[in-house]
Image 1 (cartoon, helix red, strand yellow):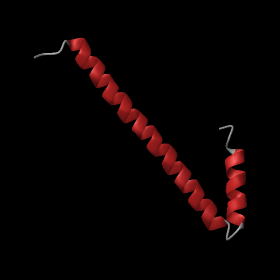
Image 2: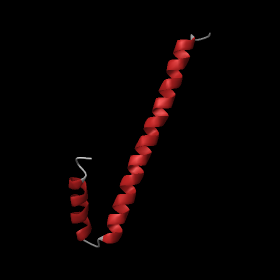
Image 3: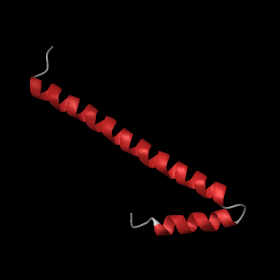
Length: 62
């Protein structure tokens, strides 16, 4: 059984789209992990949680 070329093209585009989304999510999580690790190194103890809250509120808009 052979699919028509349009269906194969759509399937290929979906695969490329899924890979692109996975790449974007990986970059976002990597940046978040790196930023939180840097905050962890710069602020000790209870100051970390305050700095983390400030970081999140400052970055809500983008």
